[in-house]
Image (cartoon, rainbow, N blue to C red; front, top):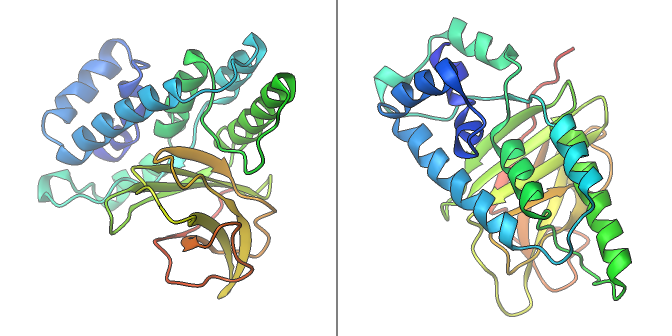
Length: 256
């Protein structure tokens, strides 16, 4: 495998999804790549926390559904600083086309295996059956985006050190946002997601202000949006951003 291809296997390695020669080759790469070593540590911790942050145990069919649907997402290689770690343009192109396991999708599969997905509800349902049904629907929606054949992703680190990823499926017209290490908010403030429609920010849902690791599907269709952002807003969210984005990710170009 090329270096660009190896960069996409951090999540699969973190949840023990690599075997045989592929695992051995990745471990040799891991010993020399600080960026991948850091991602493996983060994804291992994220999978563990997601597995414990569950309020309702989903039915077995949800786990089977997620594991079947999670196949491959083309991911941009991480930004690296060592000259030795920089892939050549041909390797980068090959890596973008490779259908390999996607890091955070693998973590999602592990979380479902432990019992569910930690995605916050703005209005808590009082009926346990309703909670389980909604949790299943959220996991289904998320897995559909992550496992879409045309899904592509961009990963960036925020100024506060959080790792953020947007996964876009142009055929579904949907996008998912995955975050690890988001700082907790106080004073009733919360994170709000936005689609960037050529400079006009369109509301796309809220995140739990007290949970640092989350995976959510943005509300609404991608449409003409070319990017997404995250801002800190008052309780209940805002119709328009009231401050600078804490995260801003450009959507990768779609592939046919």
